[in-house]
Image 1 (tube, rainbow, N blue to C red):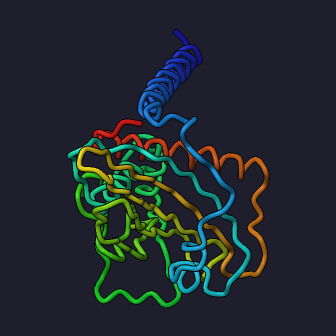
Image 2 (image 1 turned 180 degrees about the horizontal axis):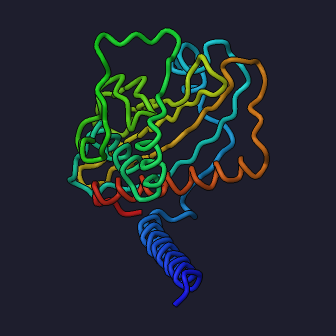
Length: 259
């Protein structure tokens, strides 16, 4: 058998392995995200004023107030009656399922290989060297990563806001802001993971929890819009939706919620 024939067979075999692996990965991702029904997700090309005007955006990610791209997606799930879950536990699972899920896996591997560092962010001065997370198993199911923690070298926790638990119907938002890029370079961005729980008015009612994943991206170094082509923007929105659905599936499994 000639070397050319052997090389050809190896190439064909490698292609088949890659195709099979990709097929299995796609099937696993689809099975996971199918839990979060697209018909129940609301998508918008803007974010809430609470994020746009937050200290995270105005002081750290986009301190010069440059033009920014925004988008968000949200869904409401039901936590069965009698089951109390703290905002922090929901957010912790939201973050863990997002960064530790199957959809994020290729990016997680890439970050591990290339070690692209997040920051610096103008005005951010951690009191101590930030905690480093390199594996999803380091993320807790119950508590959020400490402030300033870096995730897979490319993301950093910039702000955590936990609202007091409401007992009777009123609701307030809890959130965690996780940024990537830098305020000193040509790309800076922030993801806000948030939850609003509304307690039942009666003793036998269910609790509702509205999950939202919002993104703000800008060019901190120049007062001009990010030059994202239409295809890249479509990819961003599609990828963000996949990540959101993967994370929602994790929260649903954690809370045993019913959509």
